[in-house]
Image (cartoon, rainbow, N blue to C red; front, side, top):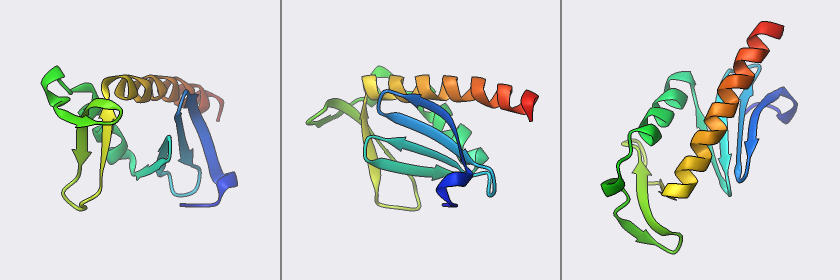
Length: 107
Protein backbone atom coordinates (compact mmCIF):
# COMPACT_ATOMS: atom_id res chain seq x y z
CA UNK A 1 0.00 0.00 0.00
CA UNK A 2 1.25 3.47 -0.83
CA UNK A 3 1.44 6.41 1.54
CA UNK A 4 -1.77 7.41 3.28
CA UNK A 5 -1.75 10.86 1.68
CA UNK A 6 -1.93 9.27 -1.78
CA UNK A 7 -5.30 7.65 -0.98
CA UNK A 8 -8.50 9.16 -2.38
CA UNK A 9 -11.43 8.28 -0.15
CA UNK A 10 -14.29 7.22 -2.40
CA UNK A 11 -16.79 6.18 0.26
CA UNK A 12 -17.27 6.03 4.01
CA UNK A 13 -20.42 4.18 4.96
CA UNK A 14 -21.03 2.61 8.37
CA UNK A 15 -18.12 0.19 8.94
CA UNK A 16 -16.73 0.47 5.39
CA UNK A 17 -14.16 2.77 3.83
CA UNK A 18 -13.28 2.46 0.14
CA UNK A 19 -10.29 4.33 -1.23
CA UNK A 20 -8.05 4.27 -4.27
CA UNK A 21 -4.37 5.11 -4.47
CA UNK A 22 -3.49 7.95 -6.84
CA UNK A 23 -0.09 6.38 -7.48
CA UNK A 24 -0.56 2.64 -7.91
CA UNK A 25 -4.33 2.75 -8.67
CA UNK A 26 -5.04 -0.07 -6.20
CA UNK A 27 -8.38 -0.08 -4.41
CA UNK A 28 -8.58 -0.49 -0.64
CA UNK A 29 -11.65 -1.69 1.20
CA UNK A 30 -11.51 -1.45 4.96
CA UNK A 31 -14.43 -3.22 6.58
CA UNK A 32 -14.37 -3.27 10.37
CA UNK A 33 -10.88 -4.61 11.09
CA UNK A 34 -10.31 -6.23 7.68
CA UNK A 35 -8.27 -4.47 4.98
CA UNK A 36 -8.62 -5.79 1.43
CA UNK A 37 -6.45 -4.53 -1.45
CA UNK A 38 -7.49 -5.07 -5.07
CA UNK A 39 -6.38 -4.07 -8.52
CA UNK A 40 -9.22 -2.72 -10.69
CA UNK A 41 -10.21 -6.11 -12.10
CA UNK A 42 -10.25 -7.74 -8.65
CA UNK A 43 -12.18 -4.80 -7.18
CA UNK A 44 -15.04 -5.19 -9.66
CA UNK A 45 -14.91 -8.99 -9.42
CA UNK A 46 -15.36 -8.75 -5.64
CA UNK A 47 -18.39 -6.50 -6.16
CA UNK A 48 -19.81 -8.94 -8.71
CA UNK A 49 -19.31 -11.80 -6.25
CA UNK A 50 -21.21 -9.89 -3.54
CA UNK A 51 -24.01 -8.97 -5.96
CA UNK A 52 -24.44 -12.59 -7.05
CA UNK A 53 -24.90 -14.10 -3.58
CA UNK A 54 -28.09 -16.04 -2.98
CA UNK A 55 -29.90 -16.70 0.29
CA UNK A 56 -28.59 -20.28 0.34
CA UNK A 57 -24.99 -18.99 0.18
CA UNK A 58 -25.35 -17.74 3.76
CA UNK A 59 -24.92 -21.25 5.13
CA UNK A 60 -22.17 -20.86 7.76
CA UNK A 61 -23.05 -20.08 11.36
CA UNK A 62 -20.81 -17.50 13.01
CA UNK A 63 -21.27 -15.23 16.04
CA UNK A 64 -22.57 -12.52 13.68
CA UNK A 65 -25.28 -14.88 12.40
CA UNK A 66 -25.70 -16.87 9.22
CA UNK A 67 -22.86 -15.83 6.96
CA UNK A 68 -21.18 -16.56 3.68
CA UNK A 69 -17.48 -17.40 3.77
CA UNK A 70 -15.58 -15.74 0.93
CA UNK A 71 -12.14 -17.11 0.12
CA UNK A 72 -9.82 -17.00 -2.83
CA UNK A 73 -7.73 -19.76 -4.33
CA UNK A 74 -4.44 -18.06 -3.42
CA UNK A 75 -4.87 -18.07 0.36
CA UNK A 76 -6.38 -19.92 3.28
CA UNK A 77 -7.65 -16.62 4.67
CA UNK A 78 -11.33 -15.84 4.23
CA UNK A 79 -13.88 -13.27 5.30
CA UNK A 80 -17.26 -14.23 6.76
CA UNK A 81 -20.03 -11.74 6.03
CA UNK A 82 -23.68 -11.80 6.97
CA UNK A 83 -26.35 -10.40 4.68
CA UNK A 84 -26.46 -6.97 6.37
CA UNK A 85 -22.68 -6.62 6.09
CA UNK A 86 -22.79 -7.50 2.40
CA UNK A 87 -25.49 -4.87 1.87
CA UNK A 88 -23.37 -2.27 3.70
CA UNK A 89 -20.33 -3.00 1.53
CA UNK A 90 -22.45 -2.83 -1.64
CA UNK A 91 -23.85 0.54 -0.50
CA UNK A 92 -20.28 1.78 -0.07
CA UNK A 93 -19.49 0.50 -3.59
CA UNK A 94 -22.43 2.53 -4.96
CA UNK A 95 -21.20 5.68 -3.25
CA UNK A 96 -17.66 5.03 -4.47
CA UNK A 97 -18.84 4.69 -8.09
CA UNK A 98 -20.60 8.05 -7.91
CA UNK A 99 -17.56 9.73 -6.41
CA UNK A 100 -15.28 8.22 -9.07
CA UNK A 101 -17.52 9.64 -11.80
CA UNK A 102 -17.40 13.09 -10.18
CA UNK A 103 -13.64 12.80 -9.73
CA UNK A 104 -13.18 11.85 -13.40
CA UNK A 105 -15.16 14.93 -14.49
CA UNK A 106 -13.28 17.30 -12.21
CA UNK A 107 -9.79 15.96 -12.76
